Image (cartoon, rainbow, N blue to C red; front, side, top):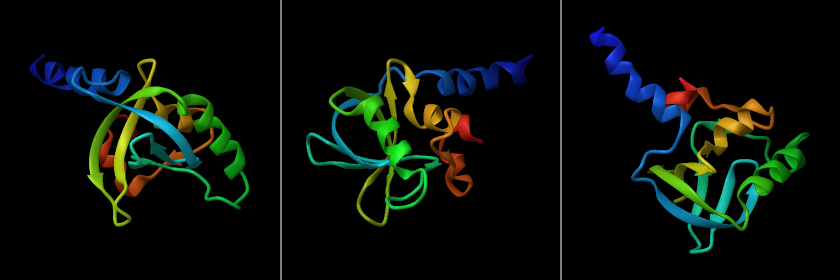
Length: 122
């Protein structure tokens, strides 16, 4: 029973954003996994990988993420900075993890190399 109690916080975290999540307004999205906030902060979605601009499926992934977040204030859980100085983060809209939704809808895949950063992607 103790082991189950230990897992419950991890499982619930995967379903909804943490209560202390900061917010950011998304101004635009470059591709299916990279957006820019109204403050100029560049955000790379954690734990997911979508097709790059010019590759097959990239337009669909870009349209999908844009419809979910552009012009909206979303929750953000910053994890790290990448080599391009982008914030690596999870975004949440209406209590839903954006990256997780992109994967579920087939617009992105779990980026196995970094999946350890997101409890839902392990």
